[in-house]
Amino acid sequence: MEQQKIDCFKCKHFYITWDKGFPYGCKAMGFKTKNMPSDVVYQSSGMECLKCEEKDKKAKPVYE
Image (cartoon, rainbow, N blue to C red; front, side, top):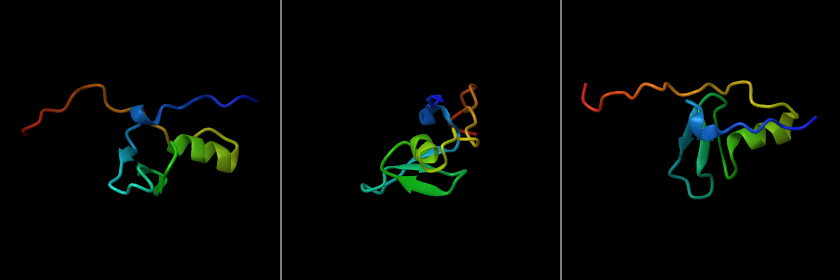
């Protein structure tokens, strides 16, 4: 079975860290990594990420 590629940049749980050694993070899973979090989840479990949720499409106002 082939992995369905999940784009972490479109997930609301994904974030960029300040840690040069582990630049990507997942708030839902609670970890930081060198690789895309969805790739780490697939390598660890053999399943695609079940926590992936698309970001809100509507832009939020800067000052509110």
